[in-house]
Length: 245
Length: 350
Image (cartoon, rainbow over all chains, first blue to last red; front, side, top):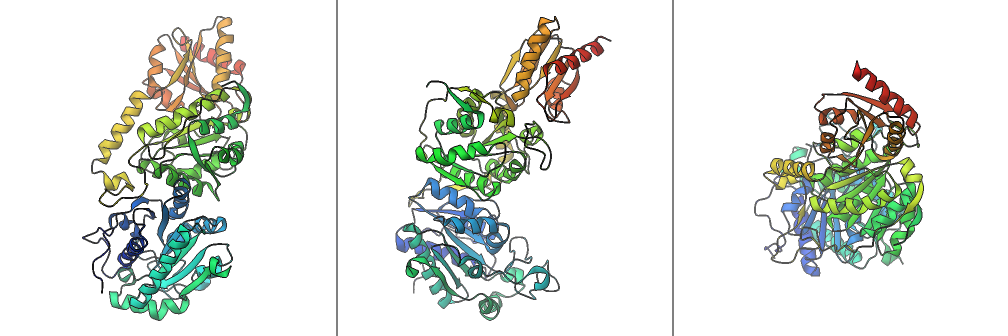
């Protein structure tokens, strides 16, 4: 079992809450880059939310972009530096709410960037408000009586909206356990391989725990992913353009 | 290069390429759309990247990425679209990134209308987005200046690592004049160490982010940057100011009419002059020291409120009568300007 993190993971003191999923994602990306031998090629764009702490957690050249705009910013980077790998690392609020237009039009153009979307079913940085991904009945600080789908709609499932686009790759994995992490790593690696080959837009959503804002222990928040999130947000690959061809 | 006949918007677009701009992302809006249309085919010819973005928001945030990656990046808009750019402009400032943003001004608040206007003065000069900041603002008054100021704007943006705005308007954007496009220059995206390019093992990671996070002395750093701009970058043109009894203050298309007004008034024996701010920010306070005989100042602007009057009062320590000749849907007329200036002069005598 390998314990040492890749040398691109630089943080010694984590700014993330205990049990947060971002640390897992950082390591996962760093391992994939190391294994592909592309650590020196990756340019990252993070959102202003919790994931922005990654700028101090890894040693990749990184932009902290405006909330919801990292995918658009990543497109700008990739056009100028086509020889680099370019990733937007964002939450579900950024990808599917305030930045939905940017996400959708990047998919429409099939721009060659990777989007990693951390789905924790709420707004983490601002203290746990309702997100487009919040589950029916979910108690949040802006749905204190539980999310009412009649008012707020059903949780957004990216595969229902995006498989119609001519994009390179779309997948969802869970970071709730070792099995999920192995699958997540496989999908992330595949996204970056497709990206390196210039196949187009790749979006990988990672189901992630947020114990602080769910008022749960880390263990319970992980169990919630398995018990409540995965039944609504199925895991797997939804679009794999090259395989389809 | 020989002179050619071009629309103001097209000259601006071609001059951006000449200045080494190789990234553009914009969204259609009248009266700036010719810039987008021109670059949609021309950018490719010079090996650059053109994106018609899904919105002005996406456009400006693509520019932020391109600028961070080292390109000379441009976006353009007008009125309603320029408002949407403000988020990104504020982030460009906070991230110490150079970029050029053009506002081909149109008239009005909200939708307003597509005719020429100069109503974005406050938004342009006061920092149109959130936070306290300024951007350099250049105001061209001809098709030739549209071209010349693009080169200057990119140089200034890099000098200060700060966005630079160009305040054009529908009249200058749509008119056709003879113009000489400056010589083509190549820009190296690796010219600066700070641009993101990939972090080599053992090297220091490059971070493009909020100076408020990274610079413990950000207040001093930012204040000194603005102080230096105010000290070094004031640009203006004074026309017959030294002995003028009434001084017009006008920029852009309005300044062209004021030039005519000065000539006409002087032929009649009325000592009229004009200060033409070329930088709207920093406002050319230095220009006013030449107005030694002035009794009154009259701004000539295509807006309702006379937005520039505040700056004129500040530049003259509020020691003089300051008024505004506003033409809203139409370009101001010299006769009307002279009549109002004479009226002020008479009141000054009493």
